Each structure stands twice: as structure tokens, then as C-alpha cells.
Image (cartoon, helix red, strand yellow):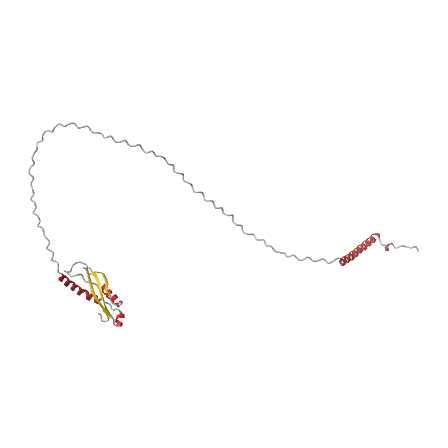
Length: 246
């Protein structure tokens, strides 16, 4: 029986090269792993770098500022031109006027005589008789001092009741039962108008003085009597002020 060879069991050349390549790759990987292990055992550990702090920066857009305004410089004040002084020459003096003496007039011939005619006599009107001069009546004779004093006494008799009626007794005098007297001097015009008043003799009590002066100022006085002298007259009257005064 003839001997047959099964060539199908023998690997082909391409398959053998592939196996060699795979095996070589596996060996290389094994060597790399072993080298890394050896390198890791012999290499000191690497210190980790510290973490850096990160600062966040935010960009902000600032508003644009307006450009600075340029203030115009004030213009210098115009200097007024100096006035031009014109020298005015004074006018020449006027010549004195010449005095012309007029010539003497020629003598005139005498005029012929004029006949004078006598005018008729004017008729005179009768003059009225002069009016009689009326002489004013003679002034009355001046009054005697006794008559004047009598009239003044009558007028004072009219003034005194008026002052007593206008008298107001203060309440403190009534409550304490006090009284007093003050002399008041005052001036009255012929129409009865009070011109001024003052106290010439005071009381120790001030309330009495005030009440007496107020009574004179508040009283309305009548005009002077018919035959009294028509001139301002000064009077002096004693005013009694007290609880019993009416």
C-alpha cells in the first residue's frame, strides 16, 4: 500500500508568521508590564502640587464720563480809546465898536405963531357931602380888683362841684377808711378848655394825689362868664379824697 502524506496538517507559512508575531507582541507587553512594575518600585513618589487659588475677576464696564466742558475765557474789556483833545483856538477879540457922533442938526426955522383958542369952561359936578364919621362907643372902664375877684369866685364856685362829681375814690382808701387832701393847679382857656394840670401840694397818700389829678383832668369846664377877662387863667383848688367824699 502506498504511503500517503497529509499535507493538510502542516501549518502554512502565513499562519506561522502570524503566530510568531502574536507571540512576540505578547512578550513585549509582558516585558513592558514588568518594567513598569520595577520602575514604580524604585521611583520615589511625586509630591502633589498644591492647589492654586483661583480668583474670579469680573469685568465691569464703567460709564463714559462726558468730556470736560471748556469754559471760554472772558474776553478782555475793550479799552475805550482816549479822547482826542482838539485845541480850540479862542476867537479873536471883537473890535470895540466905534462911537459915531451924529452931526449937528441944522437949525430949523422958527415956526409961525399959533393962535391959541381958549376952550370953554368945563361944567363942574357938585361934590357929594362927606359922610359923617361914626365914632365907636367908648370902652367900658376897667373892672376893679374887687369885681374881678368876685367874678373869679363865682366861676370857681361852678368848677368845684364839677371836679367833685368826676372824683373817683380808690377802693383801698374806702376799705381802710383813709382820706387826704391835695392842691391841684390848672389852666383854663376862655372857652373852658383845660390846658394843663399838676399837683402843687401833695398828700402823703399817693392814691389821693392820683385821684385828685384825675378828677381835674376828667372834668368838663364851662366857658368864662361874660364879664370875665378873655385870657387864659390859672386856678388852684383843694381836692379832698377819702371814704366820706361824694
